[in-house]
Length: 503
Image (cartoon, rainbow, N blue to C red):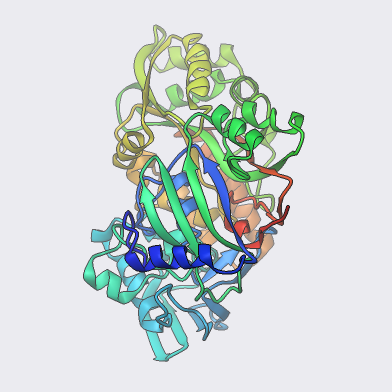
């Protein structure tokens, strides 16, 4: 079970039997979204569209709930040692992969060895560099031995990029072509950019689902998604475009769920090449951008201007950060001081579809930077092409929507530490950023951690390798028959596990 794009004879017979049997208590939820997954390897995927699908199929040791608390998943309990250098997990004895095999400590060890192997190119590798060794003393215990205290390690382990996969799948090299997880659903069929069929995982340790599966249609035009909701062709949908989302409540029988998210819209600069190597040029770009204007034009004001840290416990008031109020005079002066009074030309890349606001963001930024002589050429591209270029760091500027995390270190170490596996995408690092990140990693006093990361926010906006813009909302729409979905600030669709379908 789990091989995608193939419906087995067994599953076909099961469906036929279900149709001829007595009416089942559960139903399949018909749903739609506009962007499909770009791949199926949970350790490598960075696209939101991929993460949303894989979170329904795979599980990490722990997960984050709607209140941003770390709660059990494959692990039923965990404990740090007094010196903070050992983290011990007890696995849920009922945790099984969808083929019925028990999740064993050997699977956990193999999963993290794969993540830490540089050859894997795992998206979250740098979150786990403190792991020196992993012990598996019995069939339900995993012990992570650390080189130093690592306060955000547990939060990092809640990501689907830290999913536990079968050791046998790693050995067979089938990750990415087949799916075999311990999550609430089984991916039975995947037709890229068209549809997915998922069935309830009868072996899921999280409990029995009230729905028997998900039939997902990929509809790139979100007005078509809204039309499908109106006609009852789908009963639940993820909406990315705020313009479409604002139309949902005006339709009788439809409900809109709107949740602030931790993910952030940002203009990424390549500070390693050309004019943007100059600090004053990067600062000029930051001063020239009216963040609220970008938010109003691209997202209909559906969000709020943000600094680098979007989680409430660590967020800094943007008014305290460098040049968060547009100042064109200052921007022009900085350009002149840097020797670019006449400006320069550059390209900015953006993806079509996700976020759907990317083109509008790029256009507003293009107009604003023209005020200080920067001539921007906008490159729009399909999401998979964009991600490939983004992961290579192959851009002058990039309009991006990046994921937020509940802890600053987990959110940013891969970009802003010298060992970060995506620092080539960030295109900038300095000693202060690296030091602050690592101080925040080992500091256990919450008040001191907040001070450290407030200084991080202040410094990174002053050196301006990126220009943070704003955070928005996640939107889901449903018909009256769908009950129980709970959205989270992470944008996860794991809340589908609580959904019921009525008349």
